[in-house]
Image (cartoon, rainbow over all chains, first blue to last red; front, side, top):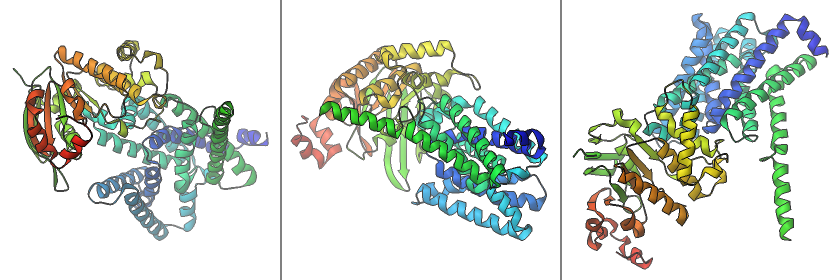
Length: 285
Length: 247
């Protein structure tokens, strides 16, 4: 209750709340496609690869959005290039490229700025969201949601059966990089809320929980967003009340929801499956 | 008559290792064609190269006399069962509905008309009672019938199926081959990668016998000769006899 009063009262908290809700929604939506395409590790990589882009943008004095999308995509292309042109496996290629980008980002940022800035970019500081940050997040969020809405058909079929999609003429490689671009945008939007290091959790944990709850992609997307929003609100509450890092509390809230779903989901939950297995055994005894 | 598919001097390699060498052939419309050959003969590679799904080193493929780029929407492709994620959150009817996507404009969604059509296609493979199931809940044969329904929903001129009978029960196999033969009777062309020699002579009009290069192409009677088959299978020949394949 105190939290609700505080939200009514303090502008900074309203901005924080609105920003984290948007982050919860878009991470849930993009996360569904990421996990269904088996790209959880790629999500982690691209989110880290945004760091040098943010740093270079500071250096050039441009909006960090552009730098972030640029380096995110460069790393996505580099990962694909190494995989396709050597015997190096995809996960190894991811490991090489994103750590390199991340390391470069750390060096640039420490050369330019104080370590507090680095800390905020890495771990988020949602209670310090400025109005401009909030508008960037809301703007990016709307673009991402509109893109998924408009290209839902193409995203669905290329995630499920890329060969069939390519056979009837969809540009599957372009769609892959399009999704990578959306992913970098989501990461940028999440910088203030959860930070670069933990954004992957917001991408995959709510989506994974939703995956255990439904058999339809459209419903999975809504559930993942809902779980993302719920995690954001609970996490923000804990962050505000106990003075903890917002990124960490939001991520742990999502993890808690995932554990509940993992145990109690009606069809794919652990407990339900155990009960069914035991019933079967009992019927044979 | 215009060939449905004409291939000239097709070469494909992986990192310099040739997988498909210098293939020339022309397939007439309305034919049910089987691509056969030993394991590692490049059957699937050949199918994918035909459809420009993997890069080729050399050669030209014309589909209905045109470049593949302009006729893609007339092509239905059914991949190997092993490449599909059967846990994907999609229902049987929605899987068939994907077959209507090539004809739906960008930014549009499938409407009632498409959904009804998908349901009709599901009826043709006898799977309408499973329309709301998640695809992973079906047996292998049922899954393959659903994918055939999706191909039918595409209203294609040419059908390409990669190993459609692997892990499929006998009655599903019969349903699938019956429907494919029906498509051929209406003038559609069907190309099937097939690994089981024993049924090849019942199923197909024409056979492409492959072992990296084209060993033989012709009617089933022409290709199904012991000496011709032996040229593709070399050492595996004795083994074939042992498992009771009569050639």
